[in-house]
Amino acid sequence: MPVSFPPALDLSLDLLRCPTCRTGCLHPDHGALRCPVGHTFDIARHGYASLLTGTRATSGDYADMVQARGRFLSTGAYAPIREVGARLAADAVSEQGTVVDMGCGTGYYLAGLLDQMPGARGLGLDTSVRALRLAARAHDRAAAVAWDVFRPFPLADGAADVVLDVFAPRNPAEFHRVLRPTGRLIVIRPTGRHLAELRGQVPAMVAIDPAKEQRLHQALDPFFEAVVTEQVEYSASLTRLDVLDLVAMTPSARHVSPADLNGGVLPDQVTVSVLATAYQPR
Image (tube, rainbow, N blue to C red; front, side):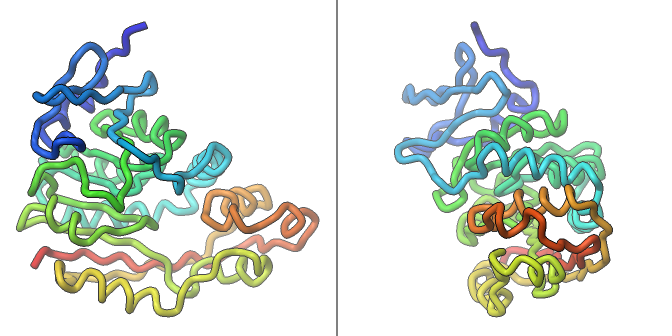
């Protein structure tokens, strides 16, 4: 059965470059994307384009993690995080801008940003096909592409007005390459107090490296200068099911066993604490 071409992906074709030959633009061809040389990439029936080639990345979220993330984010517990990212972007660039979300997950943060920028278009990249199924439907102006953030991006130089990175891996050199000189990189990451109550009750959860901020600045400093940093910190009330979803949607899901959670005492309130920084390219 032929796959209809997603309208949001059509809006983003000028941003994309062939990941195999690195030069050719991509165009629609019978439910796929093709470059002038003939390299062809499938468009999934769920609406995202798969540009990954060779060995597939193994770090993408699996189905249970994605489902847990969808449920948890729907509670609104992380809405202030989405709001600060959207505001930093809207304050920095035109409403007609192009936003690229690296490690976009389900598209939750990208959709929130596009809601605040009525003329903008978005493109989300992630390795998880389960998450991309949701990201491709997260917003009518957001397209989704399967890609690994640690590889050179299949994007044109200076394609983006905003690069958004929320709780995601970073590739500073590629962030710099795809951003316009007047663009902004927005990085949102946890502080040491983030989910402290939960980490105290579930020691198997992945700890936050105390040197995380130092390593972030060392990695970004050759390419970017910080413009503004905002701290978002508040207490979120959660049900037990919310807490279970919160654990299940994070990398800690790979380390926490059911025995660590079932029947144990879990907090009904957690501290949400993040830093959000807007950077300009050097």
